[in-house]
Length: 554
Image (cartoon, rainbow, N blue to C red; front, side, top):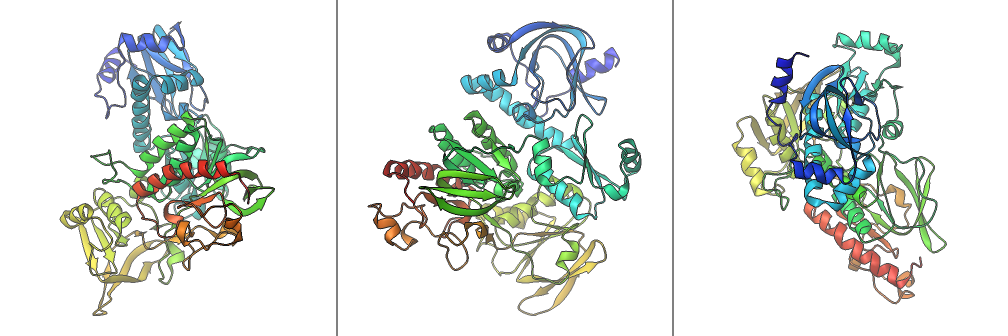
């Protein structure tokens, strides 16, 4: 690289605080945790695919950061290297090479975690930068390469898994991308074997399951604890993550799992604008990502791609079985499995679910339908947030609402934004009755549910945010549910001998099983808001302590 180009890249404006410069005092503070050492030109500090590499801050000299062999960033004195994956034991998505000799301060990943834990000011600078850098990576579409047909259900599954878990990735579409054939030939893979996932560093996975991909990416611990843990949190939405953080910070032994990704339904939300403390809003994935970092700070990894399938009392505690054949015994259990959006009752829906029907609105889905009009179905906050987010990226959003009043289920601030947006058309008292197209959606037909008149909308994708079905099948009918399948808690639990022998009534968030609690969307009567779920997650930890003080008898 020429000296002129290096200079230009060094002067590139910082992207949203992703690349701050540390002063000499901050560098000296980091040096107390690690070591200073000289570096020579051409030295590779870390390469794509490396795990657990050192953290580096540049004292003098210049370092080039490369993605796919191309220089994307040039760092000089005061800058530090790496991104979020370093703290999460994920493979590196970039290579760092010394371009001009100098000196660095190096810290191991464990030493960096110590900085984050012991020095809140310096730790916050690093964490904020790492969160922003992950967003930059995702926005550029670097990281994993998922090679497959956009019409393949498995390709869509892998894309959704990467998006929900905030893993930088891009689709190499075998139907339209001229590079796909060359890439497949390079890795000795035929089109029939797609989709394949190319992990940074060169590892190629042929149509991996979500759990295999999670393991490769450091999102899944392969061996659950065999000893009885204090608290098992099943589900990692906002409520579950709050329970994990507060429980671990209180000194409880905590195990946390989720079947898909951290964040729950909030993780599919592009921006939450009414959450306390974030005046400019926060995306659901970013909120979840911050919570995961907090959990790791207190020694807990949230394991994803592990679904609970059985629940049973055993020897004075509970055992939850998972679909990877593992079992986790626990003194207390928090049910935080949330709810899934209902499917539309419309003919041929299944024909398009693999391609153009979406139940989340993140940058991944927006990128897939960019340039085309879309329809969003639903009248709650999730539908409104999706409509506003998508309207910034597509030419037209048709918001289809069954009721006649948008204020009934949507927050006032969001109603105002929806109604003011020039690219959002609100269709009150309408329902989708027909999907048109062959392999892809080419339009939908909506019906006015009062006049019964119909007309077609020329959309190319459908986003569904209607109702919710609680994820409670794994509870094996041992936990009391209401008529809609949500978990009963507190005063709504029928008092029987299970409770009287303990000498107390159920706690507010406790189920009919002593020491088993429910929080968030899965709980009967809960307020369907991220803030309330987080509050319940904090509250439930206090109740866990109260239960344990009585002794865990089931």
